Image 1 (cartoon, one colour):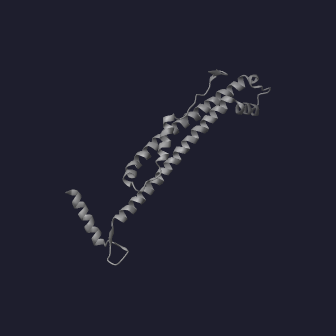
Image 2 (cartoon, one colour):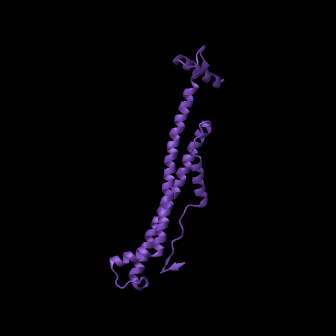
Image 3 (cartoon, rainbow, N blue to C red):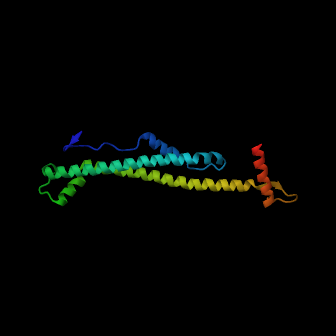
Length: 182
């Protein structure tokens, strides 16, 4: 459709499938401490997928901003060429600016930019959450490894676990490596 000699801005929004991908990642941000192997194996893929979505959202934001700028420029030129179409008696910078702000096509273009900005910032926030998640998974793995090296046997007459000595840890590590190589 053409209005005032220029095309109306087409919608520039992420596809529904991409928005569903964002929501799927958001749903997986929570860590299951009882399944660290899965959490570790999925972390990089989640981060990479969020990065792809961020790149797409940034591209769409840039396209929306460019389209908005073009829409504003075309409307402003039309206002100056045909001021009577915009109920302007005298063409001044103030009246042109006011007519530009009140133009429905410009308002729509600015709303598309606002929506694209919101989507992009949401995905950037998700990437920040995934980075935090990476740190938390790493910390949980460290805690798991630490608990692995704590002896599970109780000393006689004691309710306390004992921590392996350095020599016992080295010996245990050597035995584990040897058993995996056989």
